[in-house]
Amino acid sequence: MNSNLFEVPQRQSEIGILLIFLTRIFNLLKGFWAIIVYLLFTGPSVATLVYIVLGLGVISVLVLIYSFVYYRRFLFHIDYKNQEFVLQEGVFNTEDIAIPFDKIQQVYIKRSILQRILNVNSFVIETAGSKKEEINIKAISNEKANQLLAILIKVKDKYSEKTTNSEITGTTSENQFWTHELSFLTLLKIGISTNYLRGLALIAAFFTTIYNEVRTVSEEHSDTIQKYLDALPGPMESVSIFMFIAVIVLFLSVLITVAEVFIKYFNLKLTQTKDSLELEMGLKTNTKVSLQPRRVQLLQVITNPVQRWLNLYEVRISLANSENELQKSKIKIPGLDQATVSKVNSFLYTEQSSSFWETFSPDKILLVRRLIIALVPALASYFIVFFVDAISFTTWLLLAGLYAVIAVIWQILMFRSLKLIISEDFVFRKYGVWSKTEERFEIYKVQSISVFQPLWYEKKNLVNIIFHTAGGDISFRSVNKNILPYINYMFYKIESNSRSWM
Image (tube, one colour):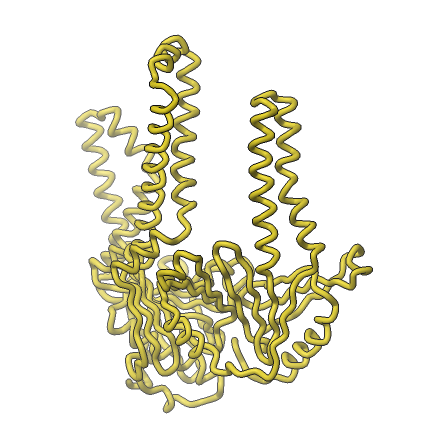
């Protein structure tokens, strides 16, 4: 690859004019949707339709002119001398953006359905601490997007290490060590075995709305509804109908989750190259991102008993970003088998050996606190039932007792799953009852550590720990003070380490 590529200011693909035009027209129509719906239902006169068509024609011409001017004034290039990526844009006011190579946090490619039809890509550049995309080139050809991605991935590291242009050679397609792709069957397994409570919530919201409407109608037609209820079948038939409805609702929730999984992770492909992990996925919006080990702040591996039986694991990778955008900076990679998870782990963390492993568990006072909090809703419901008189005391007792048993068992299992492990170079946190989660981060990437002791912890020699990283905070509560020497060791490792990760 020519190291001086993109040195001369250049424009997007010419098809970008059409993309800008269609995007602006869509945004305008979306803003006037209420008027459009009103006109469809009222049936405007011929004269009104003529004025509407003329108005739309004038607006379309103006938007087309705007799109052409915006396209002509949108220029980008790489300034190798000043070590910056430079963008110039604007129609009425010109905006110049220059991002130093060492400030670039993430670069990736994404494609919407419209962009795939037009055969162009969006090229996105983000910086650490930014609350939005710093640069988004929305109409760049596939060839140029991959070239620009390869160059910026290399220069943002090599220039920050004071290297020269002559070192910027090769492409990300070279030195592919392994590739993992999600098949149709794997996507189906993920959809069936993943958390489909969201689907149940959507269905519950739908039926709640219907129920509220039925209640309004029932007040006006109570006699008719009562006759219908009297004609309903006996208890056994009612149970059968209820079971049938429950099965249908469960099927719909699974179907919604499967559809969501296919839209998000369709054609997922994970490839390890010499310097990075290349991830591409998505049906509605296809995204291609490059992950480098030193940019990774936090690694999570999540699974549940069903997925473990199917040999499916989900990896979540947190990158450095602003505090308000931590959720956005988490990259989810589902459907990995255990062997691939080990490969990802080995690539991101080359230093796996350690001279010591120390495991810490929380004190039982945390369990007591959580049990009290978990039982508060049951106690509060008693007073609600007492004053509102919605259900009988026996029914409330059965429901509250069932809730209490489930809550107590759940909190005990959750308490037992909590583990904090400190090694020579890493910190691990494990937790989860149904979904088991293991988090890990490198000690030298920790920004700060908070240690605080509430008044009621003093006699038991307990403290709360919070590890602050650029990928989010990791807390561990009610741990014995014998952890403090290890915290001091971590401070030493952070201060004495000279490796760069930003």
